[in-house]
Amino acid sequence: MTIKIVLDNKAIDTLDLSATKNQISPLLQAIANYEQQLQFAIDYQRADSDPRELSEIPAIRLWFVRLDTIYPWLPFLLDWKAGELARYTAMLVPHQFNRSEGIMYNPEALEIFVMNKIFVLSDWLQQQGIAERSRLKSMAQLFGYELDDAFFDMI
Image (cartoon, rainbow, N blue to C red; front, side, top):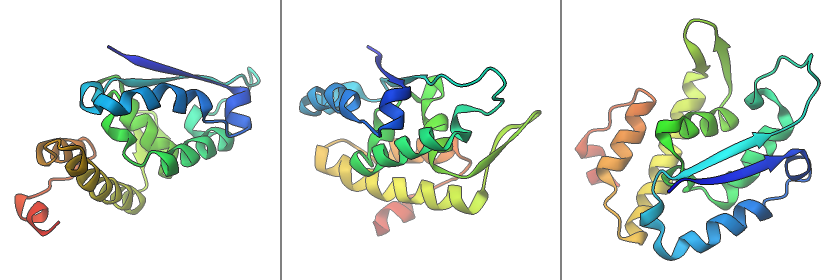
């Protein structure tokens, strides 16, 4: 069951998270049932001559930064297969677009972001009683990182 949250100019420009909170709050009772089920539909109107990708628009990025402070464990819910994790990351990590290779994250910023999410999600998943090691390894692999079991033994 995919959960879709629609964002428009008003919500983004006013940093309004109410629609997101209204959608996520009911999920908290059985959060494990909603793993990788969340998508964002961003309907942000701009001039036809504006060539920027959504993740290059400061207002949208700021909205996602605000969201990440409220739900730092949100990557658990994002639909990775639909590209939501990559888009979410692009909202929070400096990057450039390359015609042939697609999105190119700043390597140091990406490493900090991934490790931050690994630590946040590790603790949060343990609190939820959800096995975390394979999930976190999979997430790290999406960004080109291999995490050894010894790393998880330390945390």
